[in-house]
Image 1 (cartoon, rainbow, N blue to C red):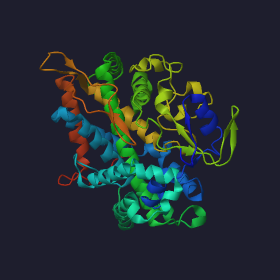
Image 2: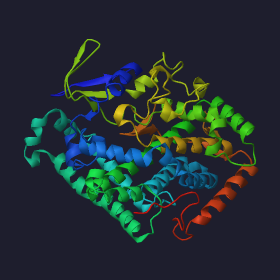
Image 3: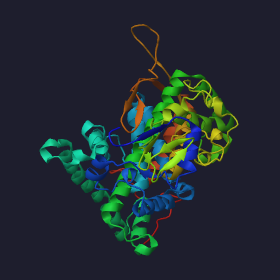
Image 4: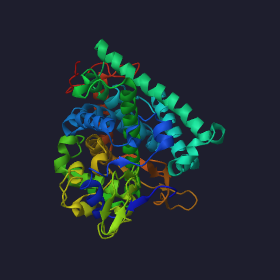
Length: 475
């Protein structure tokens, strides 16, 4: 493609051999001039070349999002989930809005310490609008041409309108990210901050450069801003994909509800402590990520940093290496009946999603939705818990059935192969009939939310005190 070589990995073993086992040389990025340099100022980790700055960002993200750190955010997940359930009781026709609010508010709480009490929250919308503009830029022919034909970058500005648009976008995007980062930083200094990623990042920034500190506000702002973008869309898209799955394949709903009834019963909601006794819930999470991956071709291609040889093929330095997650997840050798939403395929698989990604035998890895190698998604521990809690409580509290087509009197089912989106994909919008399984279930969900929201300010819907079980880090 132009002056670049792009290699597509369509099976699990090539992913393991190249991106995992040879990660020391397969962790770079292809040149992303328009989106990485012009529109992001070289600050976006997704598009950044492998090097000291990227390694520092990765090390910090790992420290603040690892499995132990992820456990500290469970009170945020619990509260946002309970609001989602009551929102579905009140307006069940607005499923997509409710899962997006749940995901966005949770991610904002984890990253910045503020929440989105309602769908359409002004601060969340600012991020969505900025990300939509970025995705639109990334998908233009001009952006692709400047990546694959570098000589184009030397053309006069009036012949490159997309570059001017990208520069304007960077100015607006950086201002948005900085405003939210600096707000969090000021709250830390004033002692009014809620526990969040930015609090811990401010502590690290205060360290000397030799101790991974001393990084700029611009870099910190982009770390936080892009974390919000990544986390807010992927979880909601996956939950939306799950509901589509049980609409089209209702046997999965019957089985997961039977498990929940046997283990939890009708008198309380499940929580994350119940997960070890809920293997079919875990199977539903794994199967949703396999069946409806939000990054069908990976977030962005890796790149090899030196010439390499593999199975008799020469891979030149700088070649892009793309994971075709969609193809791997449709491989009949790995997944019998790949087009079906069939959680039963994971029967007996007791390995967590994050742990499964590091198994030495790649044939036993559950799915590839979080990526591979050194660029694997570092928020996977938080995402896994959000999905487990979301699916467990949704299926405990509600029945999901197709709506009836008034013209034919038959069930109106979504089209499985119709997807929308850009960097993150999800099913085309569909209708569903979502009703509480009983009045008792509805009462428990309302009572749980009424109790949980006591820690929120009645006027703003923001946290009025630190949630129980969380400790506020101090500089």
